[in-house]
Amino acid sequence: MRRAVAGVWDVPGEGGGPALAAVGICFFLGSAAGCLLAAAAGGSGAESLTAYVQGFLSAAGEGDVQPPALLPLMWEVLRWPVLTVALGFTALGVLGIPILFSVRGFLLSFAVSSFVRMFGSEGCFAAALIFGVSGAVSIPALFVLGVQGLTASVRLAGRTIGESRRGSPFGRAYFVRCGMCAGAFCVCILLEYLAVPTLVGWAARMLAA
Image (cartoon, rainbow, N blue to C red; front, top):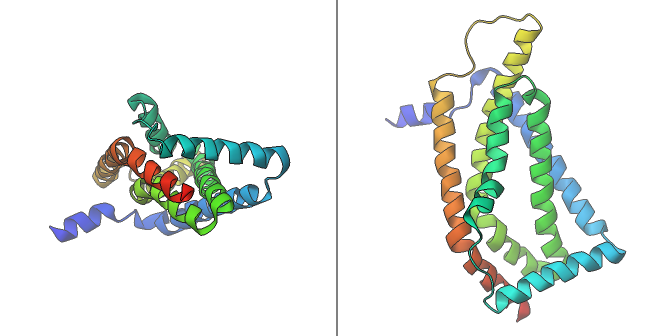
């Protein structure tokens, strides 16, 4: 039983390593760009960002943060895996999936870095509460989808230039991993809906203290 579960989570051996390296590097580069932009923000841009974050935290500290609307929340969480899976079924995923991971890393890093820039070490802890709870589940699941999707896209692209058509990149394990990751993202939606508003309130009160 343990071997079967481990086999499901093993990404395809052929191309899995390079795919993991590609999406990892793109996520890292996007994250680095987000850090640099947050650090370099100045003038009116910095003032607007500070006013926005402080206004949000002020409302949260007063208990005005309500659970988000469910449909926008589902879109916020599911857009990344849905786009990753969709690109994995086409040769366009060879470029699209790395770009998607770069954008995801950039947005997450920019948000976290903005908190750290404005509030220092306490901002780091607050960002971990706000972004880290669901991110600890969603980011690994997204990487699983990204690696297998990029591997499949490379094979599909190879077919378009006349390489061997033997074997399909979409086996049973591929779809089982998609299903398991879908379950992980459902957990993220529940966390964002039920837990994160409370955590935002705690973070706001901590930063205001």
